Length: 99
Image 1: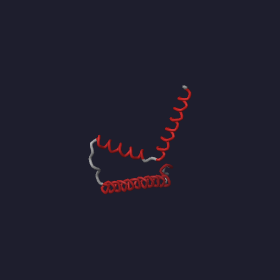
Image 2: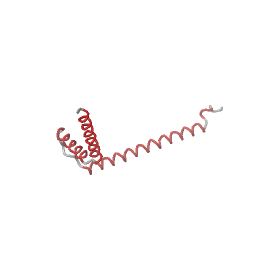
Image 3: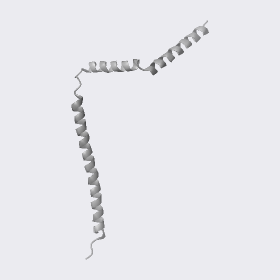
Image 4: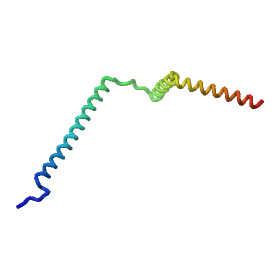
C-alpha cells in the first residue's frame, strides 16, 4: 500500500522546518520583551519618583520651563526683532501716506 502524496517525508520535514522557524522567532521576541521589561524596571528604580504635584502646580512648572526656553531662544529673538522692524517701517509708511 502506498502512502498518500501529501504525507510524504518531505512534506513532514517542511512542516517541521516551518514550525521550527516560527518557534525560533517567537522565542526571540519573547526574550527581547523580557529584557526590555527588566531594563525599564531598572531605569525606573534608579530614576526615582518625581514629587507629586497638583495639576495646577505641574502646569505652572511646565509653563515656566517653556517660558525660559522661549526667552533663551536666539532665533525667536531675531524673529521678534525682524517683526518689530517691519512694524516700524509699516507705521512710517502709513503715517507718511496720511499727510
